[in-house]
Length: 272
Image (tube, rainbow, N blue to C red; front, side, top):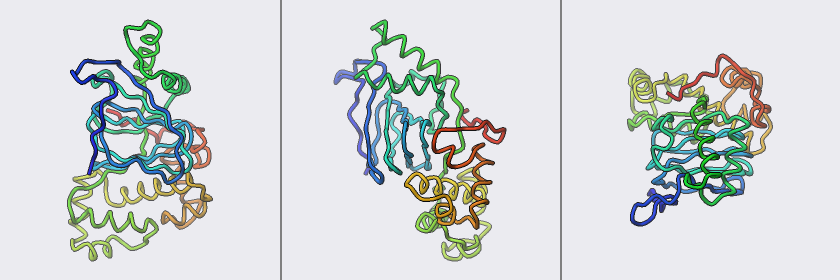
């Protein structure tokens, strides 16, 4: 059951106490923050390690020097892959009007990263304090220019498609064809294909491809070698995994998880 967290930016009478609040935490591999929601918008940032954010709508993987935007009242849980240095900023709702009202993973510029780290040294940032207002304004300006990156996995809502998803979540390396998975889920192949396309906006093959990519990334963050992570995620070879990773994210898995991103035309903005 999702827990509703107490506001960090509003007083009991609804009065705004500050515009932004920061939080820092050092978390161990495998640590899970149970499902909860905030009355504030949230920017969840990993300066080290990989976080996976789960909502009813999907899964978002957050590597180092990236962040996930979580709108107010969105129920979510967070799992740590590897040791994670987590930094969080909470925003008064509608302060960041340029960002969508849905979760997405963003690239974080060097300047925005330093601003996030600096903001987390303050308990709260108030626009009435001149020095704090300047930091606040630069953060908001930087957030206007962020680009979304394809590290999300939408979840279907239909029970038949969900059974297929749960089967693959239990065994990411499952090599069964969609025909076989459909037989075990109690639905026809055509029905499952239609459900995935209508509910996730992805074909089943594309969804499975994305799932394998994100699972392999999680295993790498937990310390596994590239070959082991690729095979566990269902790739036939290490080269196939690296090729797909480069196509999607413009660099190799090792460089990406250490914060090195090469620009690629295949990495497109979806933060619209």
